[in-house]
Length: 500
Image (cartoon, rainbow, N blue to C red; front, side, top):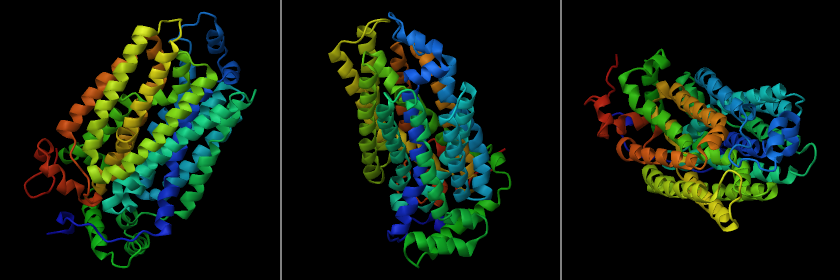
């Protein structure tokens, strides 16, 4: 029986160095989260709108403005969504760099591009300078979101892989919270508040740049590039012990299997790649179809729509940010104890109830021109917090964790690139379309997302296997062959069938 078939937890000891690696790499999440949080706040600032979107500013000031349509502008949406289109394309380039050069160089590239884009955005004098800055930041996000989850999954001990990987999502939530606090602080910093908000994005980029210099390369990346002795040395360093030969042998076996594959993207077209590819892509797509980024991007605008003034709406967004951070901690402590499926299914119920309730309240209480009664407005904020809470311990972190742990080493970077690009594509589509959808669908947009949540729950019940406690290089052999749907893609000898 090979090491890929053996069930064990390899020994390890926590060291200050490995914890430092986890936290510094997870700063890629801080960078991504800061951008998510800052975008919605900046697009609601009058100084920013006057500078680049005067028509939106005039519509916003109109005495009888339409609650659902006052921010509907394709260029305003392009400000937010251009980053994600750029990230979509760059994630495939990042996949190749991850495979050929390693995870560490990809993280450094991510930091450099995001740093340059942040500086350009803050100093912009024209709309197209802003958009180009966003595109550069998008390259940084594409590289970071490809490399960081893979890095964390590959250096984490198997029994704590879920918790370590979720550090990425935890830092995303911290970034969103910090961005909301920055937006709150700069709202009355006229006329440069928006420049300060965008410019401070250089801080997480600098942290990731420093982190990229300090962290080690992953043992898997070194071994798959035939640097065996370096891989052994790094494995000893991150495990804090000298007895790493059993784990090293498992990684070597997985890498040797991977070397039989010469064209990774062609390999993804084969029958054996269907289970991880379908799961990886759908986890990322469904993460966006919860409606979470619609809520987080435009939380300040959303709360202005239901009647809160600028200060009140940003304060509400800060409260949601705090809920997001602390709820993600639930996932860190629960994912390796309860498993992935339990957290996802519980959240589907809670998200469905809260999204549906928000939709019903707005349909009944909010017309095109009135404000919500104070009690109903507070209830919408509380329901939004309930929604964010359940997302933060489930589809948020697990949308990144599960795709990063289910691909075999030979298709890991390419398969994860498809997952990341799917996330960026749907993030782009929702960011580009949400304000128009809000204008045309009104409150029914929340019912739209509720229907998707039902679909997601059915997906978990029937198609998603449990990966808790399975070594990352043994998932292919231990998970798919036991699943009632996916087992038809593997043969009886535990080996993948040859595809067409």
